[in-house]
Image (cartoon, rainbow, N blue to C red; front, side):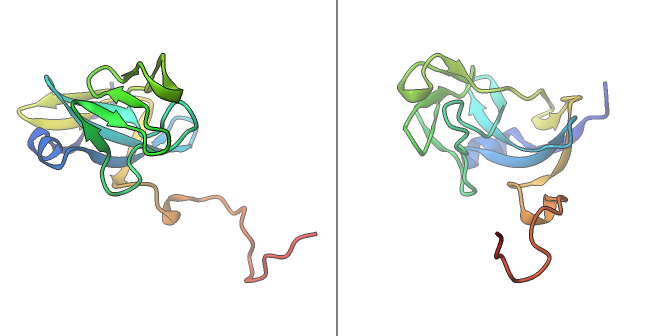
Length: 141
């Protein structure tokens, strides 16, 4: 097991309603991870609806109601503890989970397939591809 990365406190996740951070997966791809309150503490899910890859937290906190994460695009609701959705366009799917641990009310990333980058969502500075234009002209033929 790799070293644990301290993320935040359980209290912060419960007070704020959700907490977002960015990781890089073992293939080099960027992912956002969403921490949400759960009856037993905190759970972590990839920040993406299973229906159309819509971000659940678009940067200002995830919409939550009655222990469920609400997809802002189609309204599908995912149980914050299990990640399972039983309604809407994402029905019968489960959010991809991320391994975390809670020790003394502190949340740690423990998923060996992910490397912590920073708090918050994916930023342009995170992207290291050079696929964009190198000038101000965006004309292509």
